[in-house]
Image 1 (cartoon, rainbow, N blue to C red):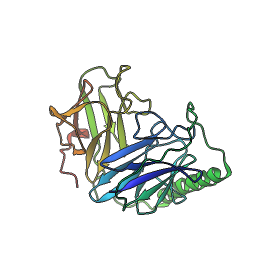
Image 2: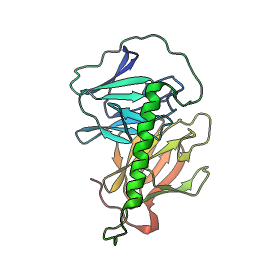
Image 3: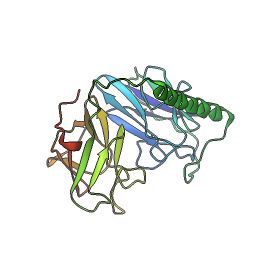
Image 4: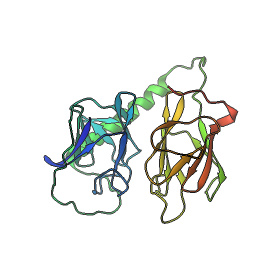
Length: 255
């Protein structure tokens, strides 16, 4: 069994079994809660993809780093050290059973703020430099005829229920459904889950992962990761959505 060990300034706070996956962030609906203003409400997530354990940044304010390098998506290796805000998370691939360890209480803090420590300024500078280099590389590429089809974009059409839009494009690598301000599809109501479902690209398709509340796909409870097929009906806490493909492109099985 794999585990993640949360640490703060060298003090072990708690171990978390990876299981089928978990989210990391400041809000209480995360499996790994880091109550610190440097951490976004939903900062990152860890999930299984085949035999690999994947770490993915959820567009956090201060970024997610592995062994000092900024990442958006990373295959975790044994001993990797993840930096989230001022906390570190160590990945142990060979753990037998996670043992929670009590640590000092952390102060409950409000909205996300930008870190201004010397170490994190340097890490953020690395992150911005990497983004700038990637942009320059893309802009510097010579124009060549496109011989491959562009990536297909999934969509969610609202069939029933209250929603801000009639249709949502799943253009991002990971799109969230929930009450949270960071969600693509916002659920209305105080008792709706902050994050109910994460829908992520996987190969040539999309995978839905339940994170809170009750979600049905074609009237069956969503208990784990599921590859979405064209025409699938999602019932997310009463909001009915139909998954499909933009411009009528038919779905294929995801890898």
